[in-house]
Image: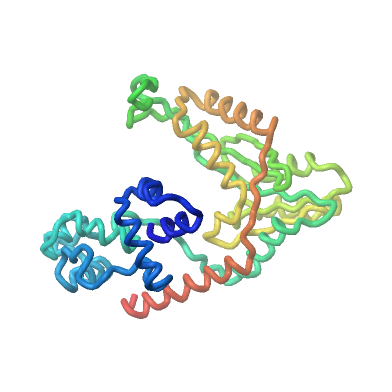
Length: 336
């Protein structure tokens, strides 16, 4: 605040105007200017000895709160501290605990999931897939393919209430299941257009039928590269034999590392579908669900928007190696 005020002063802004902008008294601005004239930049932001607000917490309290947050759990076995339980333990107010956590960017009430791939060929597969995204081959089409299995046709037990001023839309927490359908989707990485098919199952025969759909959608003379996971139905004998035919030499499969579905771009499209059509949808039958998915996908393809991959394989591998090292250290300390 002092620095901003002094910069305005150097521009010729009056003391009263600086005080108004900084929400302080004009005498305060005059003291800033006097201190700057006397001490220069070294005096900006420094609180004179004996001045300023005195610490409201005993010495060592902040360090103890941080230690307990990181190293210990509540005596009742709870998995994490709340502001009140930690305040009772340390003997301070809950607002003080909240302030300490905010100052150190700690959020014990939140937890994020993760999974570090143990695939022995992780680096090799990652470089292969990311290379397709960042530097796709010439005269070829790259697809990101996966299945969204067990899409449920859910009907709510009571009608939903519409949104109105001051109240969000509502829907019952319970539901009635009316069957499931499996969605096959392959997204053209360059254009964002998505090929879809809905099947009652996802056997090798179903996958082969969709591979044929992908093959038929690409003009002859262009290569076809498909990014997919290591599901066993993606490499059944009938699929292997079909791919081995000389007419399918243009098709190339690129497998993502195990436990790395985030590498598959079509998963991002599945999220769009789930958030915008399925999660709040009401479906009285599988046919109703099928029509809804087909309609939404058709509208998507009228103005498709590709998802742009930006992370390099080197950056990802560095983060994964750091994660593996941390996990190894934790396992070594806990001996499990």
